[in-house]
Length: 246
Image (tube, rainbow, N blue to C red):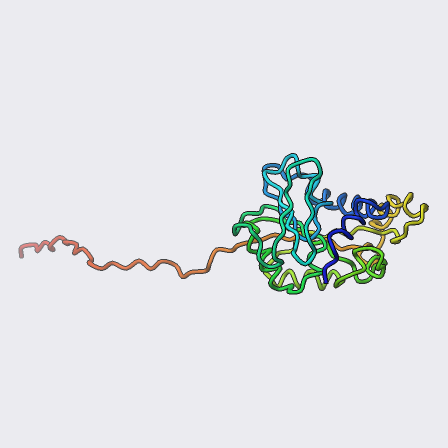
């Protein structure tokens, strides 16, 4: 079941904990994708917190928001790039996206295989995608006070296996949100220190969210080699043998 767009907006833009989560995830995304100059960047779910860094340099930015969740205009004070769509039918041409970001999309999907097929369809050959999901072993997936405490949580192995079944190639992994999902001032003030510390220990176990970067690789079809067939061979005139006189 999808969360309402107003709940997601209020968490990320109107609560200190939401701003901490937004910064932590975005920092790790930028470690994977520092820029997207002249590329088409598509987000699905509630991807706006991750799309902001690419607004100036990307060729185009599109924020797709599923109908079950609802849509909000974004960004504020600029031409709107948000689009309401069906979860498995996106208004984007096949192979159009160079980069795809999925945040609060996969864990809420009512038809995960069809959603991943749509992700594959819109991504161009060699394109990259980042999927962000709640970590099953992390504290954030157990907190219903945050969006990560709703929907389906994953282990890293489960996420990679599901993506591989839909022909994506795993490139890199990242994790984020090591501090507890608490609004207490101490935890909020020390959130960056927890992020720095968490990546030096067993991050996959302690992190609140998992991030997997994948690519779309299209392999050339295997065909038998061309067979050289001479339909009308040319007769070659050989010289007649010379007979020496006796």
